[in-house]
Length: 106
Picture 1 (cartoon, rainbow, N blue to C red):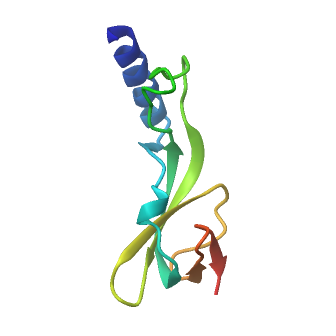
Picture 2 (cartoon, rainbow, N blue to C red):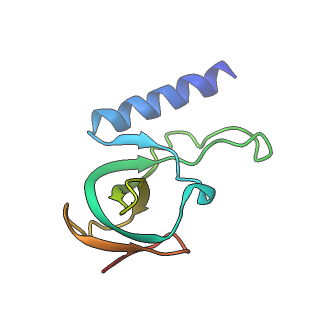
């Protein structure tokens, strides 16, 4: 157990040293559709949460998947987050967040 914790700490620190923030995926239940404006875009490394059902151990040296976390402000003032493979948008772009969790130009 201690070895796993050390391996995870090393993987996290090496990813942070590369300049990317390490995050977990955004749960689907937190996503809601709507129109909004891109507030910020941050390079991140998305590391799936470990599951006891899946053995509870991360692959050695797992650094996560490089992605871009996009923050979108909706008209009601709420904020939605999405993780994208490519940097397709810039701050200030009007976008549509779909039911499927996609971000498309408005």
